Amino acid sequence: DAGVIQSPRHEVTEMGQEVTLRCKPISGHNSLFWYRQTMMRGLELLIYFNNNVPIDDSGMPEDRFSAKMPNASFSTLKIQPSEPRDSAVYFCATREGGTGELFFGEGSRLTVL
Amino acid sequence: QQQVKQSPQSLIVQKGGISIINCAYENTAFDYFPWYQQFPGKGPALLIAIRPDVSEKKEGRFTISFNKSAKQFSLHIMDSQPGDSATYFCAASTLTGTASKLTFGTGTRLQVTL
Image (cartoon, rainbow over all chains, first blue to last red; front, side):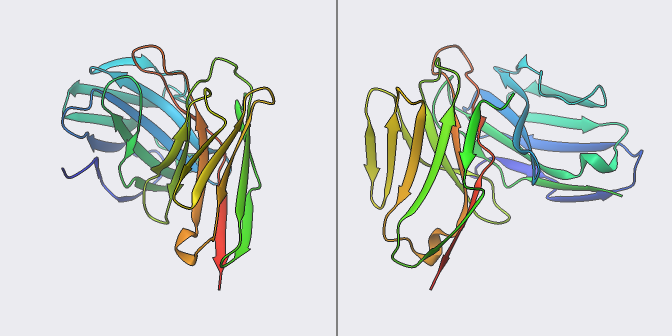
C-alpha cells in the first residue's frame, strides 16, 4: 500500500490567499484525522472524520478553516483567507476502525508570507 | 488544556547510553498510551504502545514503563544509537467509542552522539 498521501508537500502563499491541502487515506481506513504541527504547540488535532462524517471539529482554530471528506478516498483542509500564523506542517492521519495505530502522511508544509 | 505533559523538551545522549522520556496525563479515562517517533521531513510513526493493565512493555531496545496510580508513563531507549535521533511523542486516548482521538505530548527531540 502507498500509505497516506498528502499534497502538496510544500506550499508558499501570500497572506489572504486560499490554501487547499489534500489527503488520500489508506484504502479501508475509515477514520481520518487532520493535525497541525508547530514548534510552539506541537501536534494539535484540528478535526477528525469517521466513515466520512465529521465527529469533532473543536480543534479547528477559526472559521477560516474548513475540512471536508466527500468520500472514503479523499479529504481536504481549506484555509481562506490564510494568515502568517497559519504557517505550519499539516498532517493527515488515518486509522482502520475506531482504535489502534494511526498512520500519518508525510505532511504539507505551509508557509504564509 | 494540555492533557498530556511531556519532558524533557530535548535530550542529548551518548551512543550506548539510556534515553528516558517522561509523560504525565490527567484524564483517568485514558486507556491507550502509544509512543510515536518522527524523523525530519516525515510524519510520526507508531513505535510502541501500552494498555494500563500492564506496568511494562518491551520491544527490542524500547521499553514503556507505566504507573497508573501516578498517571505517568515513560519511554526508555536502551543502548541508544545515532539512528534513534528523532523527535518522540507520547500520546493518550480512550479505546472506547467509534473514533477515539489521540492527544499528543509536545515532543522530545533526542540527539544521540557518537
